[in-house]
Length: 124
Image (cartoon, rainbow, N blue to C red; front, side):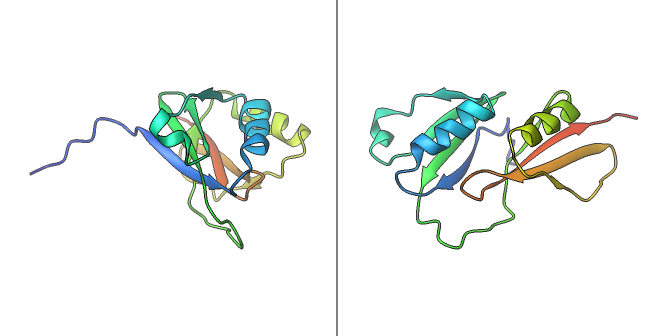
């Protein structure tokens, strides 16, 4: 059997328990992502959900002591340089990533030390 994947549905990252307001300030306020309502059955777990392009970003809650993972979502954006300048003006530290063919990219850490990558693809 071949598994046919239609598309990526969602990515989940995590924040400390009780940090939803700070996450909302960053993801809604700074990044401008559109928050969507979580299903009633999951609201008791805490966290937030966002619609980001055609996928969802789920932000769960967990113990985050000493967390510094390389795992990350990568979002393709329009006008990567303007996005980078905007984030720098907001005081967000940008990490230049190792160049790869036909892709410009950078990453940054959210206030909870989650790595986020923004990229732009260039066709030959």
